[in-house]
Every structure is written in structure tokens, then in C-alpha cells.
Length: 227
Image 1 (tube, rainbow, N blue to C red):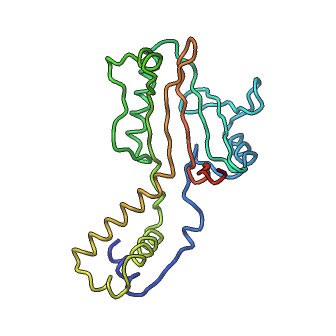
Image 2: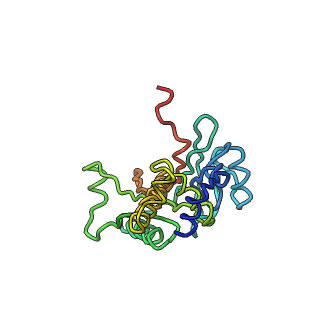
Image 3: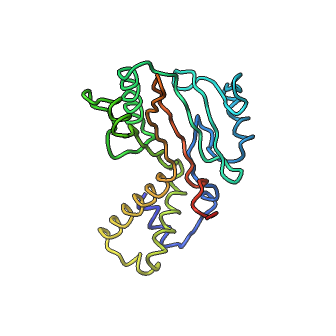
């Protein structure tokens, strides 16, 4: 990887074509992007069907469960898929389901997180939600798609050139180049991943609990531009 980076510096080769499309959150391999109609079409190809109770809701199998899907848009572009789990009758059931979901995300190399969100055994979920107004939730980030080493090197080169001239890069010591390369890789991964948020929470209804999972494309979310 370093040799590819150094050769790019020396030859001043810049290639941006591989980054023309944003690396966005995916749900079942489908980018959380585009129009709602196109998203519905692709989800139906995955086996989901319109709910008999609500034309705006899709229902189907996900992660071993029959779930409902809700699609949210901003200015015509999809920015969120919400997955609603079946209902759980008591605190123990939803705690086990929440912690199992945490373990699944933690053990999935496609996701990044800096902490564990599992609920302790002695946690009183009902009291925390109903009395203390607390929220039990967990957040993870889909890792960037780095399948093309050349494209990655090109991107790191572009980032390096925004900080240094070509002459300055060539004159860096080997230790300084290694440090720069590692820092830029970390920065790039962080910048991309933070836009690919997947999070879930426990929702308490009158008599039941549910887990809601949100697949968010933060590029498409409203950012105050209409204020």
C-alpha cells in the first residue's frame, strides 16, 4: 500500500472516478438512497410485500424475523429505513433480544463501534424508560467499502496533496510518511463511516416492547437548509 502511495506522489497521478458515487449506508445490500419508489421496487425484489394494513409499510423476513419496514425521505431522496421487530411481552424478552442484536453487530466485521451497548442484567428497563425517561439504544457505523486498493491510494493521495506539496511529500522521512499515511487512512475511514449510521433502540408501548432499527444515510438527511 505504501509503495502505491509513494508512486502516486512521485508521478502526480490523480484519479477521482472511483469516488464519483458516495459510499452510503446499505440495507440488505441496497443503498439507502434514491427515490422511495425505487427503494420499494428493490425491496420487493428481496421478498418484501406491502402490508395488508398500511400501503406505506412493507413486511417481510429480516434477520430471522418477520418485520415491518418504514421508508423516510427528504426532498424526494430516501434517508432512512426503519425496521420494527415483533413485540416482546416482557422486560426479560426485550433485554435478551437487544443484547443479542448488540453481539451480532459487534461480531460483524462490516460494522465499527468504540463501545459495547449491552444492557446489564440488573438494569430495570421499565423504571428507566417510564420514570427516568431514559433510552436504551446502540449505534454502529458501516465500514467504508475499500475493495479497490488503487482507488483508496488515489483518495489518500488527494488528501495528502491538500496538506503538502509534491516536493514536501517526497522529502518527508520514511517515519513521517508512514505516520501521515496511517493518519489519513484513519481520517478517511472515520469521515465515510460516520455518514453510514445504523442504530437501534427499545420502544415501550402501552403493554409491549419493540426494538426499532434505523439504517440512516446521513448525506440525505435534512441539515437545517430549510430554516
